[in-house]
Amino acid sequence: MYHRIQPETDKRSDLAVTVKAFQSQMALLKKQGYQTITLAGLSRSCRDKTLLPARSLIITFDDAYASVYEWARPCLAAVGFIATVFVVSRSVGQYNFWDDGQNLPRLACLGISELRNLADAGWEIGSHGAEHLNMADLSHEQLKQETADSKLELEKKLERPVEVFAYPFGSWDEPARQAVQSAGYCAACAISPGTSSVTANLFALRRVYVKPTDSLWDFRRKVSPWYLSYRAWKKR
Ligand SMILES: [Zn+2]
Image (cartoon, rainbow, N blue to C red):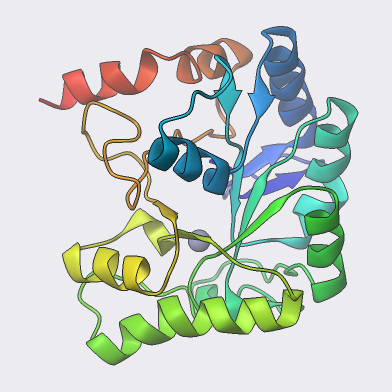
C-alpha cells in the first residue's frame, strides 16, 4: 500500500515515498520474478478456484494523488507493472479536501483524463468513498453514499466498471463491509487486521504499508510471503 510518490523526502509525512526508493523497490520485485495482478483478478480467482501465478502481487495507491501519474506510472511502466488506484469520487480533478483544517499540504488529485489513461494502460481504478470518511459508525444513508453512489459517480466519469473499494483510513465495521458488498464491489482493501490468511476476507483484504523510512531490506522483508503471518502471530 502506497499513497504519494515524489522526488523529494517529506519529513512531515509518513505517506510520501521517494521516487528513488520506489524505483529500487519495483526493480527488486521485478528481479524476484513478481508480476502484478488486479484485485478484481484476485477476487475472480478465489471465486472460480483458479490458480494465480506463484509470485503475484497487487500494488495499490490510496487517495489518487496526481503524483501517482507523474512519478509512479513511469517507474511501473519501466518494469511492466500495473497498479490499483483508489479514488475519492468527489475529489477527481480537485485536491485532498478531506485533510482541510489539519495543517497538511494541499495536493492535486488525478483528473478524469489521467484516470482514463491509467485504465487504458491496464491499471485498475477503485473507489475510496465519496468523501474519504471513516466508515466505521456511519449511518445507513452515509454508507450508501460512500459505497454505491461513489461507484456510480466514478463509473459514469470513467465509462468503465468500478469493481473494488478501499476503506479510508483502513477503517471498517460490519455494516460498512455489508454496504460495500451490496453496492456490487467484488473486493475491498483494509490495512492489516490480524487474520492468518491474506484472502480470509475478500471485503477486508490485508495490505502491507510501505513507509518512507523503509530501507530496501525492510521492503524485502515486508513483501515476503511470511511477513503478514509473522505480524498476525506477533499480535496474538
Ligand atoms: Zn485515503
